[in-house]
Image (cartoon, rainbow, N blue to C red):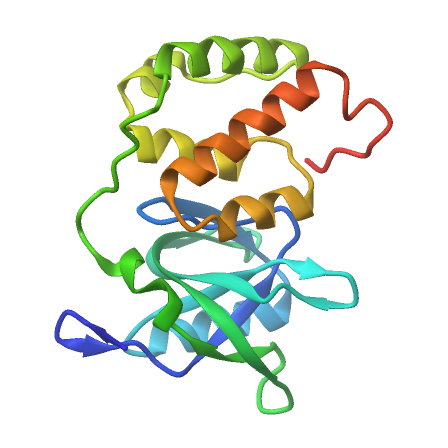
Length: 211
């Protein structure tokens, strides 16, 4: 699929990580230390696109939808671990897992369902009751014993706020995946709001929360 003057590749290296999603116009910091993923990082840096496909393990396999991020920053720690930052490029549909050529998985992917991710324009959410949402977010953060930079949250645009919270809040794998797959910003915002409201009413008292 064309991206500017370049074409997104048909295959990307896959980094399966439960609880980690990457949404449009966000960045994801990662520590990489396993040898196979250090090799993946090295191979990605040598490639022209410098892409890594973030995808969640679901059941015995992988989720059908993931997101490719471009390595925008990397540094090496004294212990050999690599700290990288991925900038979201586009979600993709996983067509096929390719095994055997590298110590890490690669995926044949279809970018077509997510052409909108490549657009520069930020989507609108005209029905967003931001004050009400922020009030529920405050109660949710208190109930979960979480903290945040409220000044940054207040200053963030609607999409960045919703997408960042979808990535950062301690939700389950299936919930994160549903947020990732939401087709529009209003759908994702409504889903996230519902998940917070559900938690506030004690709906997850007996469920394991992934951190």
